[in-house]
Image (cartoon, rainbow, N blue to C red; front, side):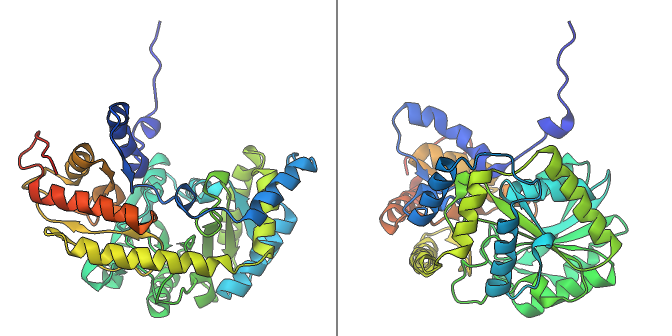
Amino acid sequence: MAGIKVTKRASNIEYAIRDVIVHTKELMKNGKKIYYLNIGDPAAFDFKTPPSLKEALCNAIAKEDNYYSPSEGLPELRQAVANKEKKINNVDITADDVLVTDGISEGIQMLLGAIVEKGDEILFPGPTYPPYISYTRFFDGTPVAYETIEKEGWQPNIDDLRSKITSRTRAIVIINPNNPAGAVYDRKTIKQILDIAGEHNLPVFSDEIYDQLTYEKEFVSAAEVTKDVPVVGLNGFSKVYQMTGWRLGYMYFKGEGKQLEALKDGVEKQCRIRICANTPVQIAATAALNGPQDFVKDIVDRLRQRRDFSHKRLNEIEGITTTKPEGAFYIFPKIEGIGKRWKNDMEFVVQLLKATGVLIVNGSGFDPVYGKDHARIVFLPPISELEKAYDALEGFMKNGHRGRGHVGHG
């Protein structure tokens, strides 16, 4: 009997944010407390889904709104998205420009599935959100990172981006606010990227799911800056509305030309083969966009306190330095001693977990060049919980692992 052959595209998939979780199983069996600072899930902490959204979901189910909805999304939700983008981000789109997806991750998969052929290149900021790397490879493309500069708050290196465009480049990705580094790009930077895209007749994919979660800097949408460069905006309901497990996102297409129309058509066809996004959740999401938004300010205020505490506390730990995030809820510190005390950042993360129960993500999982020697830490937990985790991290840095293969007692 012949063995089952698994494709390279499936067996080679990596997703650092969740791949690290496998190392917790044995520790949990032994009753060790785990500090989960690895996944950006506000609903898993003390950021709860607004009651009005939960009520809207329950009402939709009770009213038997459990049918297949249009593959491109409910018309009322697509209109609500267009209204939100105009009101919040000053982006002029219509409901017809919007497609609804099962979370932003499905949107990334569909978008790259529609544009990447074998050998094609997608340019993204390094470090980046891992699915842009994984799905580009999944469709036999080549992910290419352009540098973001740590000492400048992880802002894009425009010259490096320009130098990495080739005849195989198919799109430029912007992640703003950035995951994992927390950078927020200003209007000038976004315009420079859009100008380069325009020169080379490339679309820009702008991941903006943290658009309302910024601290000092004002968020600027790529689609608001340009009038002629094709932009595909990606967004969703997980982070601002605490609907992470509900899995709902959207993308919109702004611009003119047959190429953008063909790209949208390629995504729409993928929407059809998966039938539709969750209908009751779409109804609740419509209520979310059309309802009061005053809870957002409270979220940002609480996150700002946790950001400030994390930035100060981490920089107090010998062997750790970090810039201050300007948006989202991640901080991306540099770890001294990688390459000496620890073979690489993955070994650092695993040893830290085993010694202390603190679970963070290795920086190289966000890009092997620009992410290495770093780690991504989620600062969503309450400050009391963050304090315990950072104390444990400090003890590990002082007294922990001193040689490969040995775990210290941090």
